[in-house]
Image (cartoon, rainbow, N blue to C red; front, side):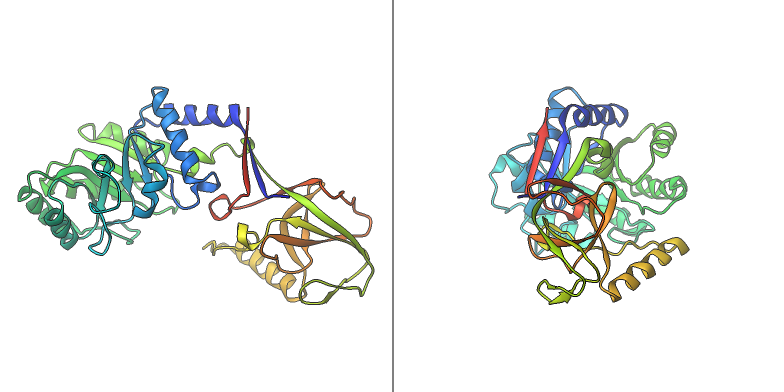
Length: 359
């Protein structure tokens, strides 16, 4: 009776090891819903990679609130990706001293660096430089001034510079070169560059051109979800009801458009089913698909992520909290109660009832 993520254990572990081998210095990212696996499971798997001799020394989480989910399952350093702010309990977070020593704070504003080092003179800090993404980060002038602040706090530990680059296509190497020039000019002892969203080719070129820097790629999706063939999402058929054209059903007393069957299946809004974040795609094809979905919605026919015999089926009405109703037209094979059907989901936005690791 659950929405289940089933993982082919041997295949998934082989992918993780292969990916770690080809990405030295990788910083696994475990944030949010843990890419569908949960934060705790990803922390344990990062520790497994480290125990097997891979170059994995730091685990990245999204927020300070997530530290508690990983700290007891992962023995290495913990990088917090969200920049430190004065209203965040940083060195006073409710963890013991051994955990606090493992935390690396991302700092993206000069005023925050001053405050953090005043409150915690021995803090470990990673300076974030603003990129073309323009989300967080210091300007080149602020980076230089950050060097002055660090020299006044000799007990602080500088872990390097962070560059969070956009996902847009095209090479980032030109931008990275300009930003690293700023890092050198800051003259504060930056030796490590923590980067996001560079291709394998870009990483290789960066290491070749900037041999004096240690490159640390922060990677989540490609690592945990890189082999989709090892992952399968299924839902349980909870009930089946034959309907004739005009029959009334559902919370909103809709009428069946033609004869067929209503299927009640596990998975609803509480799991993330039917909830969709904007894609940001601007191509003509993407816009046409959006218009098509809007047209279907207007007449009550919306394609669901559930598939039966390889065909995506329509929602009979908007998903409920923990279950959904599908419309199966006459002539289609009708599953039995208890059967499992395939579901296509966005892993970062889905909460599973069960995660089953096979093998």
